[in-house]
Amino acid sequence: MSDLTLGAAHRSLRDEVTKELRRRILSGELAQGERLVEDRLAASLGVSRNPVRESIRVLATEGFVEVVPRLGATVARLSAEEGEELFDVRMAVEGLAARLAARKRTPQSAERLRHVLDQAKEAVENGRLEDVADLNTTFHLAVGEAAGNSYLSLMMTPMLQRAQWVFSQTAAARGPHSWTEHLSLYEAIAAGDEDEAEARAVAHVAAARRSFLAAARTTNHPNDMKTVR
Amino acid sequence: MSDLTLGAAHRSLRDEVTKELRRRILSGELAQGERLVEDRLAASLGVSRNPVRESIRVLATEGFVEVVPRLGATVARLSAEEGEELFDVRMAVEGLAARLAARKRTPQSAERLRHVLDQAKEAVENGRLEDVADLNTTFHLAVGEAAGNSYLSLMMTPMLQRAQWVFSQTAAARGPHSWTEHLSLYEAIAAGDEDEAEARAVAHVAAARRSFLAAARTTNHPNDMKTVR
DNA sequence: GGTTAGGAGACTGTATACAACACATGACAT
DNA sequence: ATGTCATGTGTTGTATACAGTCTCCTAACC
Image (cartoon, rainbow over all chains, first blue to last red):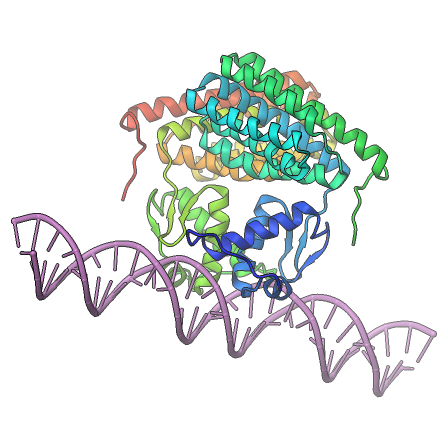
């Protein structure tokens, strides 16, 4: 139906498919537990089953999809408990990222962080909330990049996308709050203060967890997040 | 050539291919930077290109393979610096895993850890070094499982395989040493002492890093690990 | 001699085709 | 009425086919 418009520089079709499927999952367009039938997805994307299959496998290793060998793939289910558990991992990983980013700071990395912050500020002021969520993720990832540790970046990319997913599923948005905390983290990194950077990153994730818990408590039943079918 | 013997319970062929390719990379049978030509791999595994392609994509998201859109895939290169950086990530992640494992310990998880330790002890005593390396990885992963955090497990699996890769590439084996440290970590976890468990896990990874650095210094040139071509 | 156009070979990207399997439905037997 | 078996449909797993692109080699040209 809605054919993909593939990017200028001949980015392979499969990458576009992966991106689009991930987007649909993160946005909730594909609901948790929903079955991913290769034929249907292929038709809806205007491609053959082959790129779809490859994408599904990638998304499965990233944790967005569950594959049972002969039975097919479904969008992963995310219990409230699993959502909360993710924050533990984030605190450890992002704490490290912030510390290393402060240690290895360069003019370029500071510039990059500031650039993302500026974009986010602009998006906040203009009330473009979808962009704010994306830019928050981008900022966290930029901190990971600034840490100058390739495996850390590789690991953080799907982790942060998952975090965004968790939030979108609970409808717990907290854009402006985030922004000031990001600024404060940026300052510690730019100042090269490792301990403070780590502490602020951990505190930031902890604050995000509290938002999540509050939202989860009001919008959902005790043990499961909404699992629209 | 060497057709895969696919497991009893009809585990899909593609899973076997992924496992086998990963094994070949970890063992060095496929050298760093070596080109992965789909046709050749397919022929050598006795399957068609399709499962091979899917496997390559999965291994790429795990960080063992690098894919450049129209040019093909190569085994990832691991500089000595990247190898060392991995230890930073491991300290953060495995420290958390040990802490959580101590917090959430159950008779079952303790039993599981002890079982792996017993196997490792037996392998050490019988001098089966390849098995020791695998069992060390298994133990670390078991700690991750004991933490009862699904995303943590998901993240740790490729991370630990990568760690094993790093060691095999530098020929830095330290089996027996590891074993006593593992035992000590197990005891802290079984005692439910969170702080001690985290500290011992971090110390264990730090010790591994020292082994790595020592081995890397003697076997390699300053900035690059051996990159056989 | 160096540089550039052309073409052959190799390989990836994508589509199509077919085989194997799972599940549902319904008929038949007990 | 219930259990078991046969049949059909939908879906995944795998193989094959073809088109597009990159690289390298050759040859012609300046």
